[in-house]
Length: 298
Ligand SMILES: [Zn+2]
Picture 1 (tube, rainbow, N blue to C red):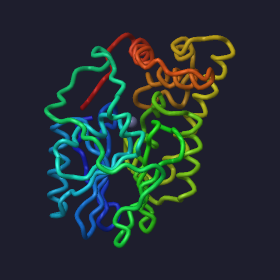
Picture 2: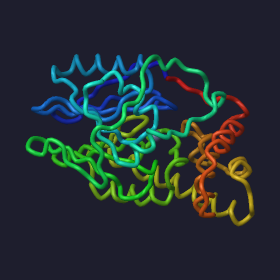
Picture 3: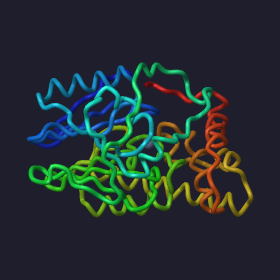
């Protein structure tokens, strides 16, 4: 968890910025350099991390960052935006709504961390289905999956010519997928959609860089989650009861296993056709974690 972030060129003029260990508030970013400047994919959670990211970009290219595409509204992907005050901010319309009304966990849920003086910025360009940036150079396709998945307003970035997919949190690599603000069923369908792209390189929202082999394990976890939720629903268990009973099996080694409790809140709410109680979901993750604050290495 102490290893430094790595800006790795995955295609000519295309970089992935991978931040170990990929846990809570430690996400990955991307960078695409074109004739009209650079386009970043996502920002970071803290001032320190955002400064490191901008330093790494400056060392790699003289191109100014003119645009940031947000893969979704979660704070780890958006907080650092205020350090790019002039950049256009591109996001799905619902992500923009979510940024205006975030679900903020109670203060005791996470270990304290030093955010510094950064904050998210409101998108300056919103889209509904898809848009193509730099269409006359290297087309940067920004697409909404068409349904809720990791959140209600996800976007992924697809560079068809290079086979590079910036998946945001539609793909967790080595960490437990987190569906509290999305839809397990919609996410599984979205992973099928991403698989059909046949990407050569997949930049996950959290965890190590990989290829198409990163997609199926996420779907497998969501399938497991769905089965646990169906069983719990039949037996009338609460999310926390079901989480405590569940044998995580081959998923036990993923980072942040406590997400099972939050994920079950979403899956059970979907089965009941009700809204998620976010405060209760966060509290149940805390309780599942031995009534200890969730570890943050931000
Ligand atoms: Zn997220």
